[in-house]
Image 1 (cartoon, rainbow, N blue to C red):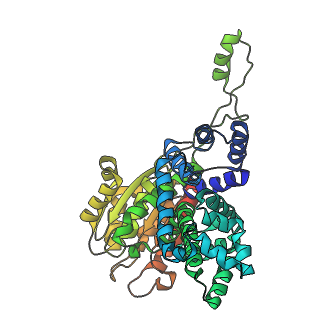
Image 2 (tube, rainbow, N blue to C red):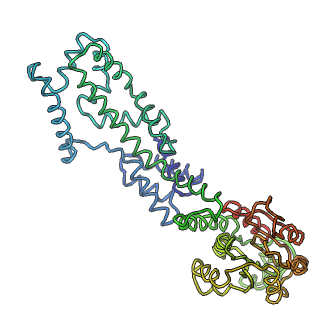
Image 3 (spheres, rainbow, N blue to C red):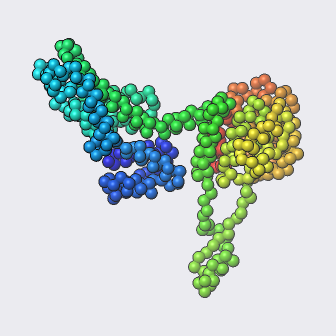
Length: 475
């Protein structure tokens, strides 16, 4: 049961429920304390241990019901299942009726097999096996238990791709002993026995049951892994190659990455234990103790808050990249310092107010509509110098996203040099391959001399890594 619990926690992790090793041990203790007899009590106890948010609780409940739903209903106690069992028995009886009439009307299916087993040791041994007894008696509960054990032994919980369903189906059948049924079928074929069709029918029933079981486990085990695989593919795909149908998924992925970075770089309050003594605060805190200064407090030097200036080329060739950079930055407002945004094509303007007045997606659409067009880096840098050059200081990080293709105009490298000298760091993110820098009308190699850091950035994985480094440098 502990193994099942660990497998269940792996399913939760694949569905983006965060479970630490310590919480896993807590879950094992909860299960040991509550026991496994009361399903609802166990579910509620594990939910309190493993689900930290309302969203995670919803996912937990869904995964719990699907993972621990072994469909072991007692047919005699459940009317619907009893009807299903009766229908299956009647179907077998109808199919065997033609063969059983010659045998005096014995029990359907079994009589022909018992008669053939008299001359066939392979078939006689098969009929005595637990697997065949479950099939003959239509004991779905026993068969499901056997499939569960076989699935654990062949590692079915590791299934990830739909192409593996056939492989695991065959492995489980081999683990159950289906090979003996196949051998018996071959023997009956050679002997041209009338029991051949009956045995083939039981073999097909077994295969259908195993295929259904593997299908259910695939939907449970691989759903989260498939989503993670898709996220990994999208995060490494060039943003301008992502089709429109996946944009919603990419937006969700950006928010997930931003949430992870926000959790990693959130500011932690701590009390200083050394430095210059804050006498005023120390004395005030001692007043309730008749002036005895049990606790000392230290002055904290306030640092100027850093600021980020994001300059995005929103011309047609790089608009998609700028869109996701802005989406990333404004999804991190809780941990990022103050962000001022600028957009340009042939001219540049500040667009920070768009993000204050509209949701992020709407603001980006308005920015693209207003500033999209042909590219002129020189004229845009002149506009930026008028708007914000005087605001740049040693606490300012400037992020420029663009392909540096200036249509053979004046690049105004002197303005870039001024930005470089005033700022703390200048980061240039270019969606083009490094091999294309400097080719044609690209001014990237010249602009690179006025940057502290320049990098190829055309997918979410690269963008996440660069923003992660940015957050480290601004803490």
